[in-house]
Length: 206
Image: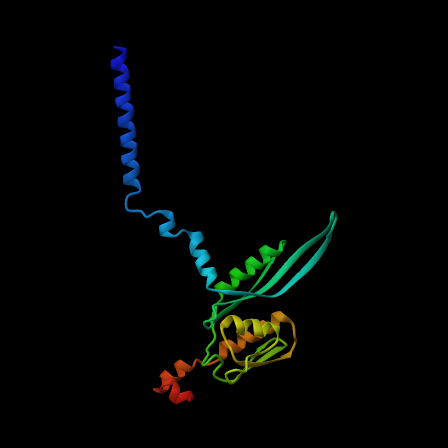
């Protein structure tokens, strides 16, 4: 009798394991492994590899409290893909890395397109923001990026290779960056103009 009870228990355990295995297989049937599907972390890394991140300015402020001084950091960064898309972001936090991360995330959410032809802008443009003005001018191939720190970071992240710029008025980095993006927003797209006039780019620009 004891041997028969042991045999019955073993059969019941095997049946339970088989049912559990089948249930697990049916639940995950048709789903690829996590590495094959590509999780959220993998997608984020792939996107990050396509962008160029440049830190324009990092400010530190101190607040005197009862226990001492409390520091806060503000970061201004520029992000671009070297293919004509660029954006800027401003982030604040009590930690340097967190402030930079916030500014990069905001820059990626505010990307704009910089119209370019042969690595430069198609025409002159002046951008204004408060007391800052930035002038952008096209340049011949081989000229390089002739610009200050903030404007150079934006043009480099956007992928421009030849451009001349001049900063007028206030030299505050935040105002200069906003004035530069104001100029970018008003630059006309060469392809759109050529298509509207019914001409090719070579006929329009030579």
